[in-house]
Length: 113
Length: 110
Image 1 (tube, chains in turn purple, brown):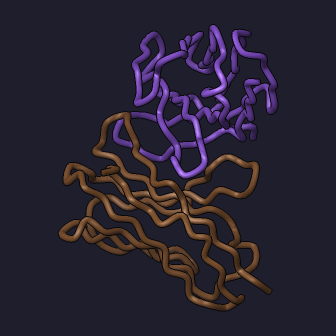
Image 2 (cartoon, chains in turn green, orange; image 1 turned 60 degrees about the vertical axis):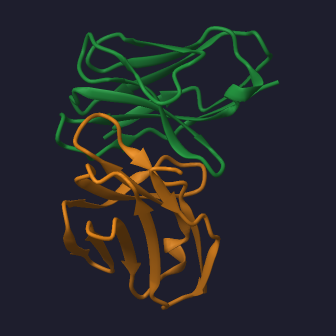
């Protein structure tokens, strides 16, 4: 009964380093999302994948890339981390368009020094 | 102006109180209205889901949507310390871009 699994849970990077956040869901959902959560800003959409093989930009895509590896997995990559990317990152999935019920992972707390 | 406005609180109430949480929005295209609950250091979890206008009740929780006023509410009856969390309102027009409020932190004191 895992749902949405994110790794790692915590990460500290230096400015300019790269890393990939991993996300996998076992609910056979079609759509997957990456959000970031900052104090006072709520959750903001970075990228989403409506279905396997497609990805689209959200509200704050700059500095990020994504890969929908297969139906289960959706990764988020920071090519050159910046302090402004210090945040908590959440992956989410939803069954299909028209079903707006998002299922979230437990988050990755990222600090960029 | 943000599409969704939510008072961040914090809101502190005694155990057993009725809690009212609210959001306003500006986009008349929103059709789906959700409330998520988020405990500290956890991911949000869906608490209530409403399509279009009206009320929905689930146990101690009641969600209300007033599209004419662009105003949604979540009521918690007989609040418990275990209800202490951040409550996020969220809305969607049916596409892939759900918009979230900033969240209201609620503390229920025993």
